Length: 53
Image 1 (tube, helix red, strand yellow):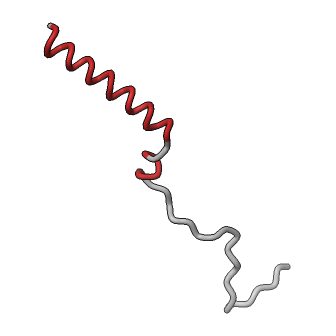
Image 2 (image 1 turned 180 degrees about the vertical axis):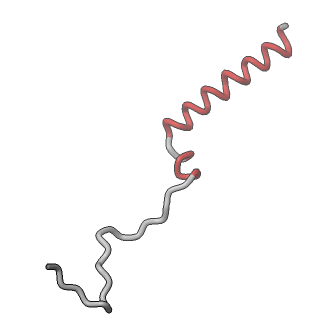
């Protein structure tokens, strides 16, 4: 049986890291390239609708 005392807490296996949030996700190049392409396509569609139709 595992022996433990009440006063000791188990050592953490990994150092505490702050959770990664939305700003970390937006700093990833593939995601920003994807969002840029989608934004460009939406912009081109809007320009086409406004000025060429």
